[in-house]
Image 1 (cartoon, rainbow, N blue to C red):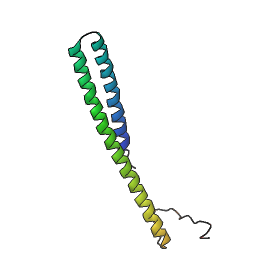
Image 2 (image 1 turned 90 degrees about the vertical axis):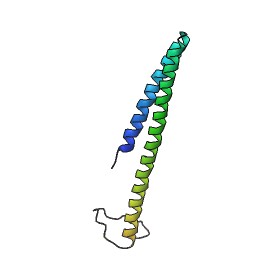
Image 3 (image 1 turned 60 degrees about the vertical axis):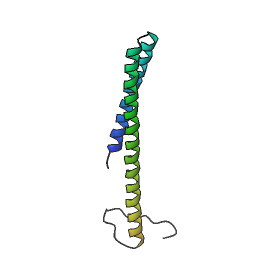
Image 4 (image 1 turned 135 degrees about the vertical axis):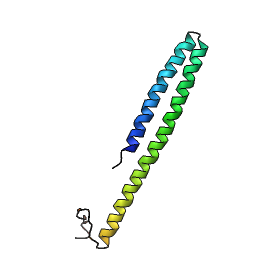
Length: 100
């Protein structure tokens, strides 16, 4: 099982934490009247936010692809077992009360 989406979610969280830090710094400098430093930190915060959005979208795509793959594999095993084929993964197909 691939954990790549977990890495992407964690990366998004890290970028959001960095963005929050820079937004706070921007606010602090703006309140102190240092508009140049405030602008610099706001710009950095925006960049980290954009990275987080990208990581979030990538994680969601990878997560969805994984579950589509799992669902496809599960449905293939179900179809094979319903047709009487032997399942080679070592799992005995379950039978409903109607089949018994």
